Length: 170
Image 1 (cartoon, rainbow, N blue to C red):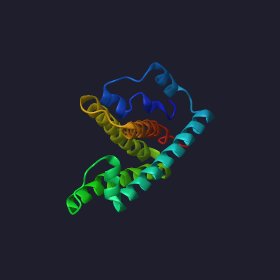
Image 2: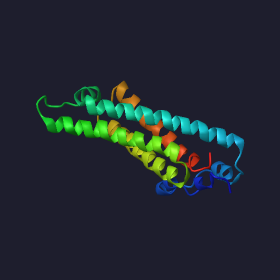
Image 3: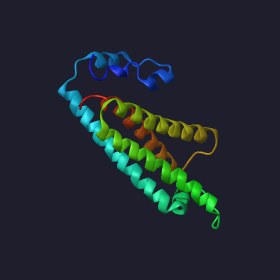
Image 4: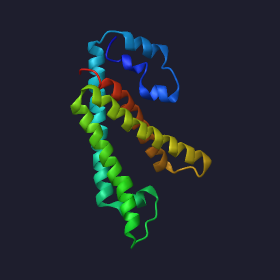
C-alpha cells in the first residue's frame, strides 16, 4: 500500500465513527506517484502558511490582549490583570503553540508529523463546531464571526489533510 494507506484507519475518521469513502480507500491503495508528491508539497506549504499566520496572531495576542479582546467582541475590565492574562493565554499562547507545532511538523517529517497535525486539526474542528453550535443556539455572529468560523474550518481541513501527506517520505 502507498503512503496514504493510513487514510482508511486515520484517527479522526475512527473517532467520528465513519469509514472514509471508497474513492479515498482506493486512492490509499494506489502506488505512490509524482502527482501525490506535488499534492503533499502543496499541503506542506499550506501548513507552513497557516503556521506563520497562527504564530503572528499569537504574538499579537500576547502583546496586545485588550485590542484582540475588542476585535473578538469581549469586554476586559480596564484595571484587571486577570482578564488581560486570560485573553493573552487564549488568543496569544494557544495560537502561538499551534503555529509552532504546525511549522515543526513540516520540518520533522516521518511518523511524528501526522499525529501532531491531526491534533492541531482536531483543535480547529472543535473551534469550528463550537462556533456553529453557539451560533445556532444563541445569537448569530457578525460577518467577522463567520469569517473566523471559515478560518477555523480551513485550518481543520488543511491540518487534517496535511497530517496524512506529511507522514509520507516527501
